[in-house]
Image (cartoon, rainbow, N blue to C red; front, side, top):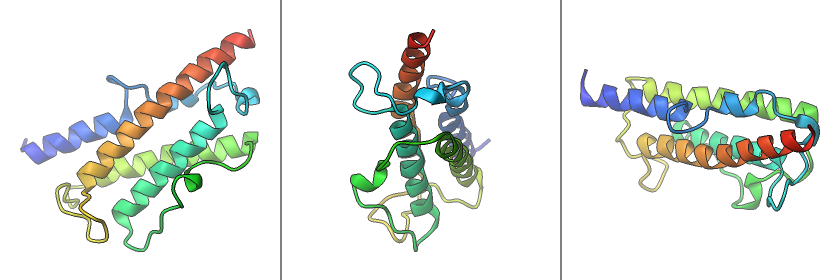
Length: 157
């Protein structure tokens, strides 16, 4: 196996989680959605805000990586929801976040994707950098979301 193929496999594993990072599916599974709009303890964000933020940021990075015509939301306000979520919102956001994560992994795994080439419409970014950004950003916020899941689940017991 050549080094680039090995790197692709490692990146896909990093995006998927399950080694040092929790998997998105594991955080979302069984989440107490009836409490998604609450801020447990001194949390600055609700679970809904975190999930939707993950979805928006991940979508933006994915689209930037593959679409020269993509326009990013305004930073930072465009990366956070403006209202509380509903069960339908949660379901749609979770489904889209998982789908976009799978699409980023597929982009990275595709041998036609040059991981090291500068993205022409960017300012020096590469698909390699963007994939690591998704993994890093997701790991951070999925950790927060898992903590809220545990807190909210324990409070309702």
